[in-house]
Image (cartoon, rainbow, N blue to C red; front, side, top):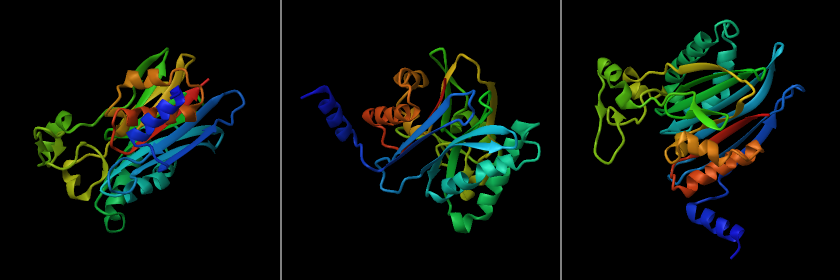
Length: 283
């Protein structure tokens, strides 16, 4: 059996299927050579795929914006699908986006969450985590997140996490101050009110009194040492460290192939969750 045949058999055992979505794109700026690729694979749960991505370059005024996001839904796909359609427009429609970007993003997250809660009859009782990244003219990267989807940048071969995993135990005091509680049952992950495994999310109307939708926001410069950015849902991060993910794609120049490789690695490491991944390469 050849090496390729062995790898194909390993992938089959790991659960690879045709239930995936993939794509790629690139910056239109002639002075930049920035490419992106994404790949999603449905997990082994019985429910429909609940991960959604945004990966595109958009001309806004005199600037080019790279818009990238992972939305990881729970208890249904309507909320993450709504976020895919509306969150970036809400952010860019904020009047102070260009001058007070962090404030604008936080305000847009709050407004979007309020709308989701108002549409609970239509969108259901579920919710979604989110990690968003806005690349401004290939020079500035603004990342925001709620939940445990993660953004990791690679600089000189070293992984640096740009987001924060909003874990219930880390925010226990804030949750309890709102009248909620955090369970730590042996064999299970910590959960808000015994239900949700993240302390911040969009939606989740029944838990919202005890949950926050305020994002963590970070603003970094893209310099010559910045090699690539990874955005991924927790289906990847449950089984791979930040540094392991970076090293797995260090020498894969095609961003789409890199994103696909990461999802395949997660499956080989027995991840059972939906897995979605975006890679943005800065050349």
